[in-house]
Amino acid sequence: MMSAIFRSWLSASAPLLGAALLWTGHASADAPGDKALKGMDEAMNRAKTQYFEYEVVNQEPGKSEKKMALKVWLKGEKRLTEFTAPADMKGTKVLILSPTQMYVYLPAFGKIRRIASHVTDQGFMGLAFSQDDLATQMYAPLYDAQVASDAAAEMKLVAKAKAGQTTPHGKIEFLVAKDKNLPTELKYFNTSGTHVKTETRTNYTCQGNVCTPEELKMVDHTKGGHWTKMIRKAWKVNEAMSDNLFSKRNLEK
Image (cartoon, rainbow, N blue to C red; front, side, top):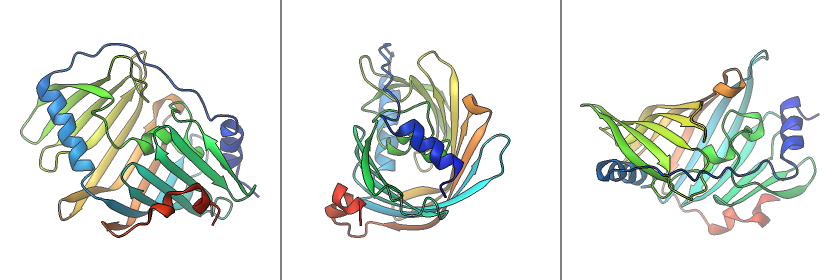
């Protein structure tokens, strides 16, 4: 039988999975801030392909911890996620072709559904992470940045949505570690300026010049501190991946 979390997600996501939020406020950027944000993007996207296996711990307020497992394939902006545990979610796949093209395969129904592009108030498959949180790999095209502080080891960037740009969040505050030029903390704000989520990325390790965190944790402050932790168990960089892997047809295999 499907878990309550999975049934709830399916029920909420079946029609469109939510609506996009449009942030039209103008952010005043500065050249150093934009340069730093672009540099962070570059450091995050050096690999041609990546493969991950994660153990996932999900803690909703008032409920016991739920453990999951998933595999992730990345190539450019394409992302394929497959759940391998628990049993009721095994075989569920999510394909992200771009920020506006996302699909989910539900083995219990044998169907592929297109899902909404921008969801900021609903968790992905019951997690504290949303589709947008998982899909966003480049921030500079969406946000204008300012340097809020600049210390020896880290820099704080405040990034606000570009005028007229549809973005998952109204504002994001980044703590960027200077040694690797990668974010260690991201604070997400909605269009009203309310701090809604905090993500931490810790224990970075590297293969060549490609570095990723061993652990990612998202806390949703709008849902009583609901948190999800993703712990990296396996990681491969720049292995050959066919474009056919990232196809709707492949979801049903």
